[in-house]
Amino acid sequence: MTSNVKKTWKERTILKLKNWQMQVKEQLQSATKRQVLKNRLIDFIITVFKYILVIGLCFVILYPLLLQLAIAFRAPTDVNNPTVLWIPGEFSLKNFEVSLIALRYWKALKNSFILAFGVTILQLVSTSLAGYAFARLPFKGSKLLFGLALFTIIVPQTVISLPILRSVTKMGLIGKPITIFLMAGLGMGIKSGIFIYLFRQFYRGIPTELEEAAYVDGANVFQVFYRIMLPNARGAIITVALLAFVWQWNDYYFTTLFISRSNIDFMTLTTQQVSVLYGLQQALTDAGIWGLMGQEITNNPLFSSMILNTSGILVMIPLLVMYFFVQKLFVTGIERSGIVG
Image 1: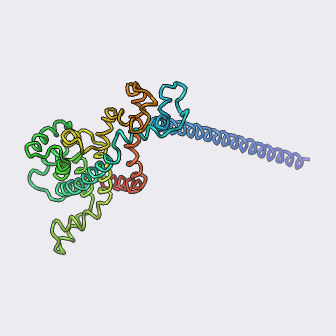
Image 2: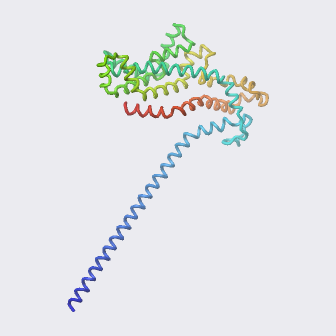
Image 3: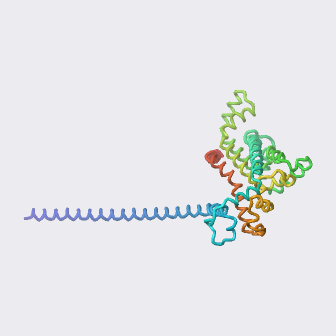
């Protein structure tokens, strides 16, 4: 009898322990499920927020470009139609035809390429040499000169350009592209201070053991620069080359001040874009739509804005095509410059 009671008590105790273990296990599983659901909900909210942020940024960036394209492909006769906003009522290339004529596009394109390419090469030579001197060839007053080079980044363009204008005027070089080339070759080109700083930081990141080994082998300073430093500075070269080309391509102030103001035959796309409205009547006549639209069309601000908008696209197209082919090199250059600097 006693053994049966003990057995029954033992079984009940074991059963209670099993039930308690099952309850604890269920509670743990329930808590784990709640935590998993909570984490999933948080991840979902974060993902939705990221998509909203990315879509919003894309809209802000792409909205002007899409609107610009929608306006450019609109027929000139739809300029006063308030119902035409995004999708043109009639697709037309007349705006491009008028803009090409008003910009004198092909001649201005050739001049822009000549000026931008020449300035890029000369700025690469001058700023890479200056950066190497500041990084590896310390001399008395080098810190002061480097500070002055950086100071040119802060000083307004007018402060720098006026003394140069007086000098080139006395030399009889005003109105000639060689003026811009001389500025670039002498380290006074657009944003040359930034390029000198980039090269200096890049060279300082290259191990000095490479130079010492070259000096031991009998190399001189220029041989070390040409054979050791430049091949290892590919990232800085790519970055500076692309920035110099784009900044010169988009430059209006220096090009107008030193060339176009005194030489109307040498125009670039940026200088022509500013004056595109002055040749609008002749461009409309050459395009064969002056008589169709009426003489008052040139006084219509909406039509003028449409032509300027289309001209802006034509000015951007060469840079977009160029960037399409060199974007990998540009990204690599930026990354390598950041790592070394």
